[in-house]
Length: 206
Image 1: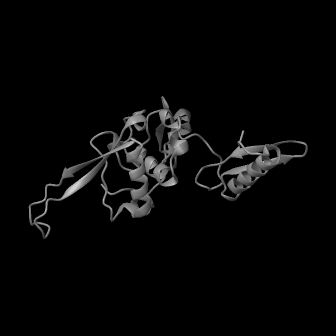
Image 2: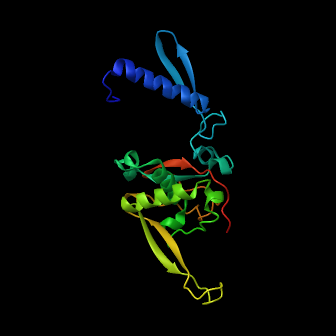
């Protein structure tokens, strides 16, 4: 299954190492049974050690939605080789775009100075990931002139802003009416043709 030369030995070791790493991160618990398969229990993805529940569980049970349960959808079409082949910077930026409904509408923009504080991602990772997504046809970049009086900012150059819009397989699922483009704005509609990812980042200024 892992396409290794010696799956009976190397495969078992790789799985054991991966499970131990996930335990260290507080993402799973592993209960071993001598002579039987181990029992693996999934925990919350934030590493808190709390029990894992689907993000939509609060809506189904009638509980009050909290920021910890807000989520967005990853289109199923992206799992047909796109996510598996992209680099970590590209995957990171893909999740940023998918978490922001503006990337499906008029285009998402940000201040490059504030981006690291908003998302916890370095400028180099942002640039590398965005460039790769553009080359893969998953993000389209356009430019929009900013309504700043010439000379009003200390020079006579026109100021422009990059707008990022997801395209191709990345547009496979609508965000749902509950999201407004800001972290903490609400919980998305129940998933239809996508897989849910819990939202985790600081509030972006309005």
